[in-house]
Length: 269
Image 1 (tube, rainbow, N blue to C red):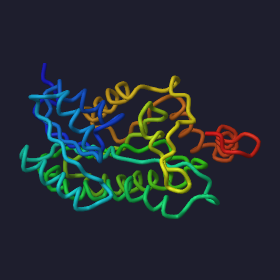
Image 2 (image 1 turned 180 degrees about the horizontal axis):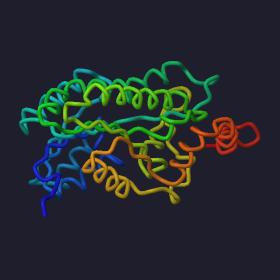
Image 3 (image 1 turned 90 degrees about the horizontal axis):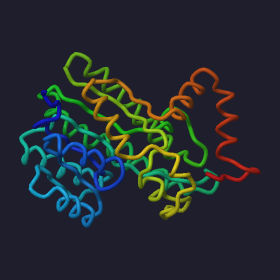
Image 4 (image 1 turned 45 degrees about the vertical axis):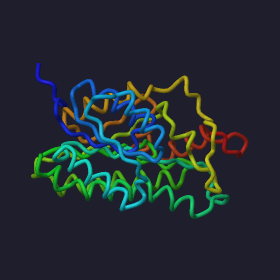
């Protein structure tokens, strides 16, 4: 049986944790050539040790820095000869009501989540077009429905969805597939690494991790969707319900979302 990912070059941003790492752990056994970047050198080293002897290229990079993105994409093309699939996965979250939140926090979230996607996609685009490949954005339910206490995060994911939709339409006849994925609540490091209202790491997750989809399960769904060249992928029942409610019953969705995130006027999630 032909394996879709065999010998495909897959570049994944933010591959040292969560969904990014699960994607790498799934792709390497399928014979893909994988390149990834992350900010933590130790975690990237651990990945190299884990997949020793396999086609894995790692680069220390912060995607909010255009030069880091350039180094990541160019070194990947130089190492593997091109890029078939780009998965824009690197991201940070935030938690804090707008009245308490420094504007710099929102700017930082936008720079990582949105501009990081723009930089890497723009740089990889000629190679992906040449190979009639795939561009993926790991977005969020927060890209369909604004979530309280996460205004900067929601803004960045709405931006990613709209930008990728524009790009998908531009590339409609090129043979390139552009897809955005909304994982719903998934067990990953993103909430632990969320910035608080002052820009410090939150350090604890207010969500019940036990009720969430695992990162490995999420990675499996993403890879199937890439193979089927889907347009969008919304995961988890809660995620699908939220997108549906917001589209058809927006005022009711306001009330339900408010109830979910607040207790006695205080942000609890």
